[in-house]
Image 1 (cartoon, rainbow, N blue to C red):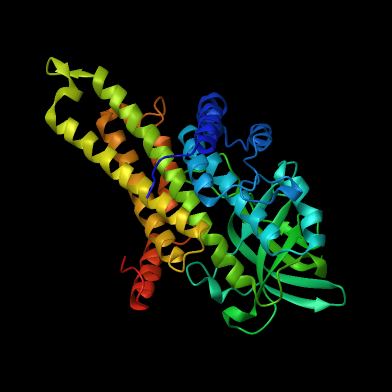
Image 2 (image 1 turned 135 degrees about the vertical axis):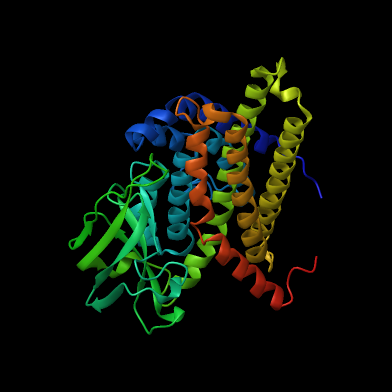
Length: 383
């Protein structure tokens, strides 16, 4: 085992860290407060290769590994977890097109997506099927050289603002084998969007329902083959879970650094509060849990890169652990700030709000436990 980052990894880690501190961090409060989707700043991130991190080079991607992506997303999230998380979702949707799409759909969408001239969303969840994703009801019926799609998707990041929606639809029976994946452009006839959701956090990215009413999409927009959609969705989520876990790491690291600085300066009872052993122990535990979570994320990413048969198990474990740790560290950092942590003058309350949803999306942490338990029952996880 070699835990040392390569020279290339150190280089793009430092590049992502500098970008996040110079572009994301100074603007994160305003983006949150005014609910701004930072299009120009996202395109600047794309100029550094962050819009197609593990998309192939043929269509403008960076062709990096899942471990590389985890390193990058931790750094971006230290500047703004909400915006970094949208970049993660965009990357997941773009990867699905690149990995499973035919030449026509790849050439149609990927050049715009890897520059973020076009934005992507991932559409799986529906009002009636959240954790039970295979129960989705959005239906696509073949009509000549088009699919006619009816139904709707819920809680879609980028909803109403994205240019292409990588959507799971039912083309066959009611089982998981009846699900297919289609890339649906935002200007397709019959597509519409609900009102923007009013959210606790993640305010720098839009979220809305995506609705299909006799929406017509060319058959060539099919990603993979009919019946492969659920497999594609689950494979995408393995990487998505790592990315959102890495975003939790970045937010938590930023919160921990804020707490260290604050407790070193804040004085009570005649001394800096950071000199009280109770505070020192709390900081020590926060740092230890954060380091453990980082190791789990990077190990799982390495297993996904290696196509290890237990990769899904480790992705679920890492997502569950890292997102719980990320939220808890942010919440502990807020507590160490006392009343000031509750004010918007400090970033802690925003970090708490932004990381809370990480325990819900890409599969709730309860579903992560279901995935882990099933894999253990199959004999995995024995080391």
